[in-house]
Length: 132
Ligand SMILES: [Fe+2]
Image (cartoon, rainbow, N blue to C red; front, side):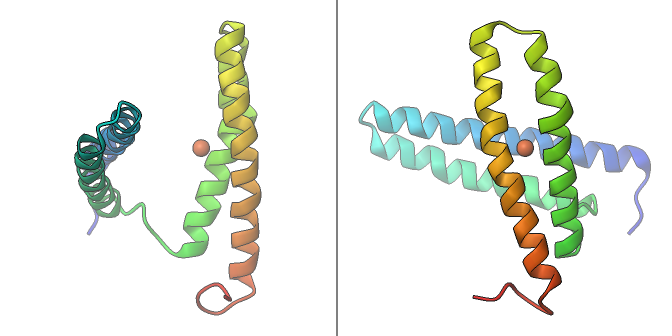
């Protein structure tokens, strides 16, 4: 189905909103766990899973979930952009403590980049799923 640009844009907005909620709910779950409230933590996690589902549904409707190699290639492009442009630019404009947080994110994302590259490579050498 081909959608009008506005519908496409709104599906992405919905995706971003629900994906952010899912992450916030997981943060709340971690906090509840630290406060010794495991049942509250569990409730947050269940809601987070439902938010993930709503995010996925909208991303799929927007046609943004494609073949495995295309999804890997776009994940790689996003990670590179964030590591090489987005975080370095933001880092230049913030205090040292915040800059350190961004450095930590980029460091971890470099590992993600390497993992995504090796997945793409492994996939290019197989005809179906990754070899076990
Ligand atoms: Fe990222």
